[in-house]
Image 1 (cartoon, one colour):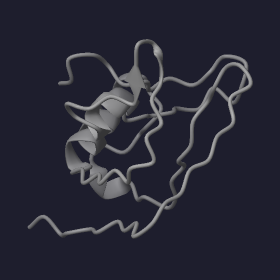
Image 2: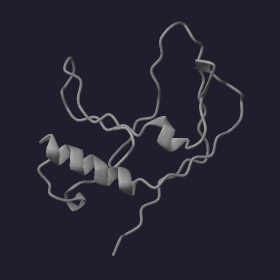
Image 3: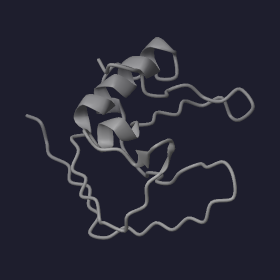
Image 4: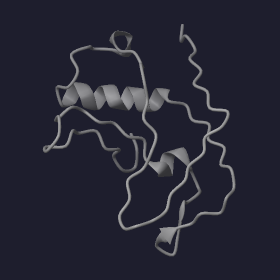
Length: 109
């Protein structure tokens, strides 16, 4: 579905549980957080609005294909948390602020 796969497999040295990540190129389409091979902090607030449904469908497809899930549809799954953050190399100083965050769910009838 996506032009390059999102990560969906567990790490061999950890729990081995499925991890599904939405890549920043999908969360920030047409924008980059990098310039000339380095992070580009600019102090500007970034507005992100993303429809999670295509990613949930893709997650389910990978989860069924990799045998992480037994539920045959999204009806058997629920979202009960999220993780937001980053990993880095080197000794960068980091700060992240989040404001006005919301997650809205709509029934698809």
